[in-house]
View 1 (cartoon, rainbow, N blue to C red):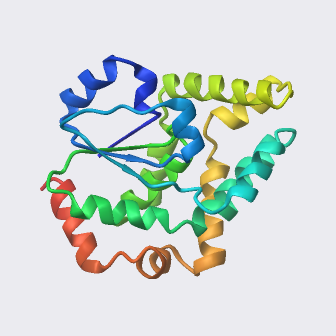
View 2 (cartoon, rainbow, N blue to C red):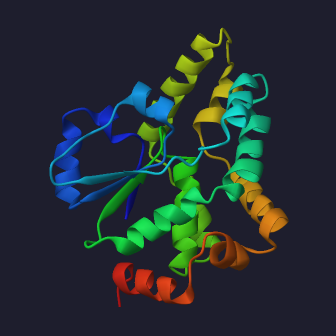
Length: 218
């Protein structure tokens, strides 16, 4: 399993590295607007599933965009209030379970927030502990940060705002406190991570065994 920013941002090289990794399934976590703005990659031998993690939260998502004057607060709210309430992460897991082949890629525009939350869920289901999950979350490619920075700057320009270096960093990088906010939100809404996975996302013990048998070595 692989995560990334929007593959279309890599241009013609995307088809080459998708093929080299053996990826045959792509899960797109973006909104319809983000897809129109960022484009898609269509390959004959790769299936693409659109799972909009922000579906139905339109007004709230727009409000998050408007509070660029409080970038840290925006990110904490996104991780704590929005992500733990999204059943779309469960749809991603069910899609992965239904695949006929194992290799897949999941992504959002920048590959670090919706995608990172999805990665933490998948890692929990595979049996990884929090230390490993945080390490994976914080090990972000500099290219992802560069891509996210460009997206944030474009958003700021469209809204007539100017962001300083600290604000750009909060929006384009990853912070332990953001993932902590996700777990806080899961606890507040669902009681525990295990209840969240089983009762809210609908992932059974048999589903976990299937995932572990497919993606873990030994």
